[in-house]
Image 1 (cartoon, one colour):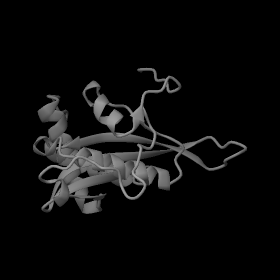
Image 2: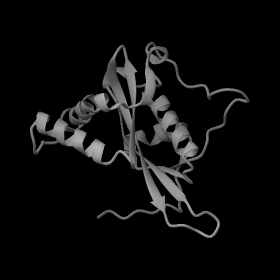
Image 3: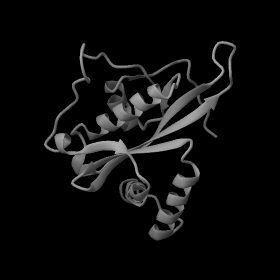
Length: 174
């Protein structure tokens, strides 16, 4: 799926769902000190909700994840949703350079990765605001398109956020 800007009102942001906590959380780029909490979200998502068996301990994973985030900070930007000092959601923007063309030397495309909101704050607009922040950042950075490889369960969520299925985008499982 790739992003097309949703229809917007003439002034301001599009109307997004409002839940009891939506007005209270902050969506922002992650700071270095947020990364261990982001790693823990990823751990809980994978081992708890998806039931995968880890190959390392939780502390080893958090350490490795933090090192990965630092090593890939030029291509991957994390955004977090924070509520009362607690990271309750994350989304990653991956920026990929593209081959220059005669009409545009510097080219890039963006990919949304690892979007997650803790279960008790789902369906409250937090995920939509994370995706909006990533999409706006990708546009501001000059990306030509934004793609997302979503789970089947998330297709409607991305469709509501302005992402469409495209016959022009192909993939091959390896």
